[in-house]
Image (cartoon, rainbow, N blue to C red; front, side, top):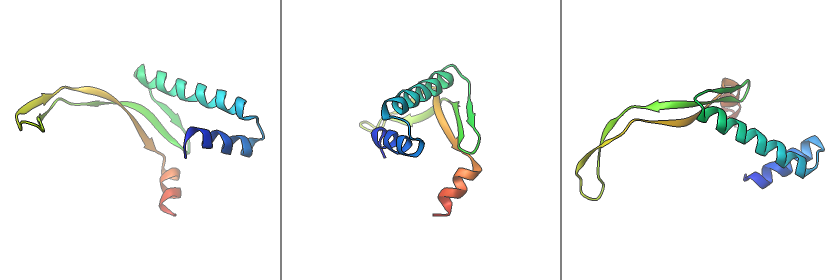
Length: 92
């Protein structure tokens, strides 16, 4: 499902116009991105948690030369599904 299909599904479920749903979805995703980018986490009960996670520096290899290299530490966005979400998917 892509964003357009999601907007149509939400609009059908809520009875709201697609333009309103698009604005709400855009605001939601922007807020999640900004919050996680600022180092905070967002928990949506029954859905999951969006949070920044730190990756440690580690050793790797250049795939072209096989030469060892150091991959620097970084922060990445992460999502953890809630227990209810995991159980719903598992039951399929």
